[in-house]
Length: 230
Image 1 (cartoon, helix red, strand yellow):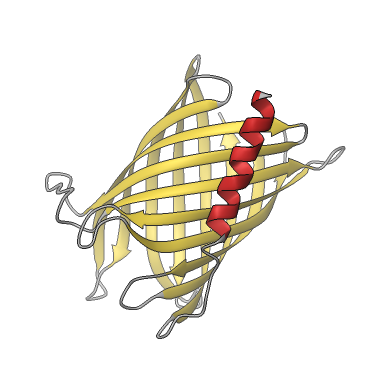
Image 2 (spheres, one colour; image 1 turned 180 degrees about the vertical axis):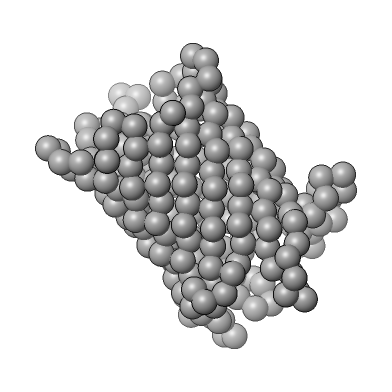
């Protein structure tokens, strides 16, 4: 009975997210981006994992440098189907005057997961806050506090090293004026390949659609990733 209730919750949430399907907006610009990322995971103690993520992004049809990011994350498994995590990200990005700027982002996650045989479902809720200076945090007046919902499904192809996955994610501003403003959707499909028991490669395509902003962007993104368990 509990399994049926959990499954229905996932499907209902997916339906609500898809209601915000991408649309053509007046004044919307388009871009093709490429991202490259590497992730290294380590089990610190029972139920506690640490991970480091390194990412490089290019924009303007992948011809211009966008940003370089380094993220540290700690994750705690509360139960077999629920975990929480917190992380800090530092990155270099090109500012308005085309020079490099250092910025930071803090985030908190709660993720629930459920398996139906080879099919896995997960629902992640994330709060993140971006800031130029960690000593100047203002959750009320800035536009940098963001609430995100992500629903993902993944499937391992039996008898092979391949898996496929897809997700849909919504973004909402919780600060600034007006607050709680829905401003972005992200759709993702991809595949992964297990190189061995500890590492894998992934390739995914993402579509990002912005809403309720002055210059909305529709971004088509190709991401090549590598992950390893230390």
